[in-house]
Length: 344
Ligand code: NAD
Ligand code: WQD
Image: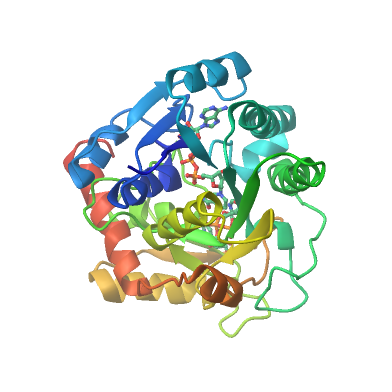
């Protein structure tokens, strides 16, 4: 029997896909989520895919008493994957204290409780946002960290530093820090996917909502960048590929496969795609048109960033495998499922 894994934020977008992969790899899971940005019905979707309903505790990770009582109930937890965080860049500019408090207190509580309860390791969700606007693409894990341009981005940088300081101070556990590029798509079963709150700020949920007619047209933020077609370039990574990397990272810590106490990996495909290329890929893959128009640049946008994933490929033995056209089809199938269920 494999040891139990605590997944914080496990009813969220990336968390739910990771719970599926963990359960399919034989790990019992307990989720802690305060449902501040997700829905309890996600558990039904996970159960329909895997045949297993994960244990679930509705609680706020910033409440250390609640985290301790979860460990009293589940004393066998050996690993944590920490997804729980507030993640909207724009909102973090309006409510910085909320972001610092939620994201940092959650992490610090988990680190304290890990030391008390003999947990072997924590996987942390970081972001390519730590590289800011890179001087050179693709970015490696050694590329310079740039000053964060939002409180949200700053919480990721500070979190990486907190983990490093705590482990260097002799904490009895390991950590794998994963820097995600742009996670997109949904589970191919269309049982789980991204559930954006209000008007989506991110490209793919806005695009699929436009394709289905919820939004009139997609605004492409700028076509005057220094890129081949003038629109911004990102590294769009399929959420199921991303989820699989977490299972490998957990195994690596639990089985002591590395002598390093902290490891950092970029999780991306290695391919940069422009906004216009992505729209085109979606239309070709699904046969559905996306009404769109070019508008001015969005303040604070990065012109281009994509990953060099070689380190994760070689050391983790993980590679992004899903073709982007399949990812666009899964995103579309999920949007159609939301419509079918009358959710959107
Ligand atoms: P999400 O909002 O879908 O999931 C986060 C989950 O955490 C939600 O279910 C929310 O209810 C929960 N949560 C938030 N604060 C909590 C708290 N204090 N206690 C308990 N639960 C809490 O977000 P996501 O896209 O799945 O992102 C997961 C993680 O990955 C986040 O840390 C995010 O910053 C990071 N990340 C996301 C992206 C992206 O583009 N989606 C990119 C890079 C990094
Ligand atoms: C992608 C591209 C936009 C919407 C954000 C966070 C980052 C990370 C991932 C967590 C950009 C363009 C978008 C639209 C558009 N999250 N776009 N019209 O900006 O790369 O990153 O999410 O860590 O920290 O900042 O993602 O999906 O918002 O944008 O043209 O309506 O799509 O300009 O080029 P981004 P995004």
